[in-house]
Amino acid sequence: MKVNLRITLVAVALCATVIAALARQPKWEFRGAWINTIYQEQYSQQSTLENKIYLCSLLDKLRHAGCNVVIFQVRPQSDAFYESDIEPWSKHLTGSAGRAPQPAWDPLQFMVEQAHARGMELHAWLNPYRVTTSAKELPPKGHIYHDHPERFVKYAGKIYFDPAYKENRDYIARVVKDIVSRYDIDAIHLDDYFYPYPVSGKPFPDNASYKKFGKGTNRGDWRRQNVNLLIEQLHKVITDTKPWVRFGISPFGIWRNKASDADGSDTNGLQNYDDLYADVLLWTRQGWVDYLIPQLYWELEHKAASTLKLSRWWNDHANGRHLYIGQSVKVTMDKPDVGGSKAKNQLAHKIALSRELPCVQGNCWWPGYLVADNYKGVADLLTDQYQSTVALVPPSPWIDDKRPGEVKHLKADCDGGRVELRWKAPSTRDKMQQARAYVVYRFDDNGDIDIDDATAIRAVTYEPQYSEVVDKGKYTYVVTVIDRANNESPEGVKIKVNCK
Image (cartoon, rainbow, N blue to C red; front, side, top):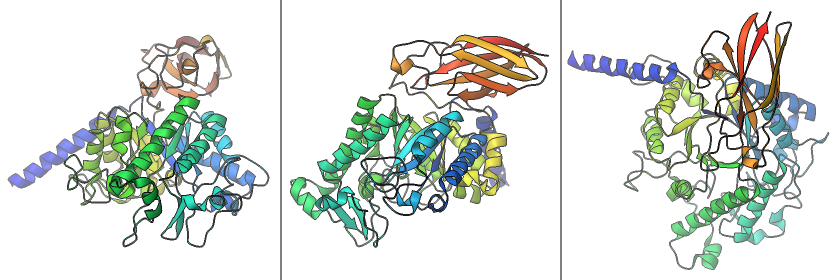
């Protein structure tokens, strides 16, 4: 009897915690979605026009589900989903590596424009070292591999850049600088593939480069330093080119197990530090990255890798940088909730957990295609309950913490029930404080004006204008400025509108 009562009390407490965390949706929250292009055959099978329509539909569905960031894969395997003089067009876009799309178009430029048109950020996602994905594949004519094969290795039938070579780090940095220089992206994003995931019985074949560069050091430390040097260099090239462009990484979900390190997590799985040679905590401590999205693709109480435990562990090791949780849509929607809840999925629990932990500032959904496809109703739940308000991407104060000026010359008209707002950006010579976007709030004329209330946000727009259809009545609109580091202007400019 006492045991049952204790279980009931725990379940009630858990339910109350979840409800409290979901009761008021945050104004500032990262709500991302990964759009991978590797292994997605639809792009090569569709025409340019069909791809544009498809991607617009994808963005519309993600925005409708409350997402505010799209992480779009533009370099799946040392290739390009954009116009590049450095690397060949991706086979995942045209069906043949090196072949340009016809009619010509630039998917990255298109996605930047279309994401911003919907008030969403666009993060350009690159895989640093992968070159091929099968034993039968060779890089196309003109690829750097053919000029410098000594700088590459073949592992488990696949070709990779050898991370030991400075020339390879310089080359990858050149690719990143090219993208940052030419495209109005919001961030550069790397995934979890550093040294390849180990294959049992097959050591990574870097004996030659270890002999050349290792100088007798511990091989694990040497490999980690090779990756550290790349991350530091990419941070520098991004900062030197456009200091407001963020640098984010989505590592595998376990840094180290507690069995390997007293500071590790209570888990039993593959480790970033020991198996992929990615010392991700060092990168945050050194300030080389602006955000991490650990891929916690397991259920909440997975025996070897509990997302419940790992979310708390990463929260405690954020090191002052942004931390978002990478969530598997399929696992989240397939697994029933825990802790006495009768919910058929873990969506509410995982979102509540992310909002409860003080150093977690949002979630990212893998893959974004499943959100768009409304897998098991996930998009409906996000739209109606958990991401029903417009959220702003959290600011990055270590990049800049100065708030921008207010909009100028705000004007409003209402004709036939349609409100039209127009304004001008604040004038400034400081590029960091330039207007990146604007937030439009709407309040009933007799209500309190509180721009901390997420339910009042009507839209984020990258253009100095906004329109919407409203019912007859009097309203007060407030427009604020978002700068390049996502700081918001302090109060906003107000204007009253009477729609008769």
